[in-house]
Amino acid sequence: MIEIKDLSVKYQGKNALTLALDKINIKINSGEIYTFIGPSGCGKSTFLYVLAGILKHYKGTVTIDGQPIDPKEQRIGLILQNYGLLPWKTVCQNSMLGTKIKDNQQKPDEYSQYILTQLGIDKLLDRYPKELSGGQQQRVAIARAFILKPDLLLMDEPFSALDAITREEIQELFLQIWKQHTVTTIFITHSVDEALYLGSKIAVFTPSPGRILQVLDNPCFQMENLRTRDEYHDMSVRLRNILHKG
Ligand SMILES: Nc1ncnc2c1ncn2[C@@H]1O[C@H](COP(=O)(O)OP(=O)(O)O)[C@@H](O)[C@H]1O
Ligand SMILES: [Mg+2]
Image 1 (tube, rainbow, N blue to C red):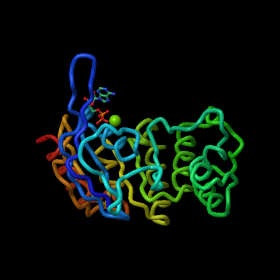
Image 2: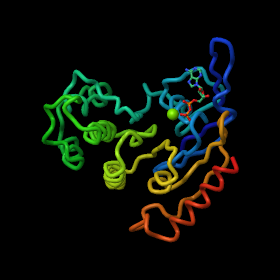
Image 3: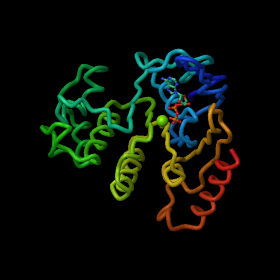
């Protein structure tokens, strides 16, 4: 379980201090996907950067299974909006980057091959990121995260730069792979549709400074033909109401 207690973050700008997160308290159960939704500027990325160990000047505590969160100690997968691939490394090298750092393993083993194949990038291993479409680059980022076998997977609006059709394809592909390799996932989004499609739990942020307004169970999670169902429409109205009341 991830436990976040009284997490606050301030940024010191040139003239003013910005309070980005204001006493976030939440417990995150293992093996679930939590989608975090909130308006632009509410502190979603700040929240993720704290969990990723990138942002260290926070107040409060963040623990995984009772241990302070630390990317050097735990295995944390990170998938960002701009894919985060290294342009001078091939698809294969980019995919293996996490395990190279953590396990000193550079060559794909059977498990890595299987993930690369599932993501449909096993024929692109010698290409460089600039020779790939956005959707293919995001598949490489997903491969890298799963090949690491993370304890925690962090995703910051990873699909928002993709066109609508590619986005739905990748959301579906991500869920398929996630079902086979269940990992505690924190998925940041500003899309109601995405929050409902991917989250087993949905946490709603207030507008800036970010606090957790509500955490909802999502009855729609993994329903077949979800987007065409009444339950989905009802949840979507409920979620929009909560977001607009702020
Ligand atoms: N490096 C920074 N310096 C100063 N203010 C920042 C910095 N990064 C983010 N902020 C401010 O903190 C708030 C939260 O930003 P962010 O976490 O990026 O929000 P979101 O991801 O929800 O759009 C915003 O008001 C933003 O302007
Ligand atoms: Mg952001």
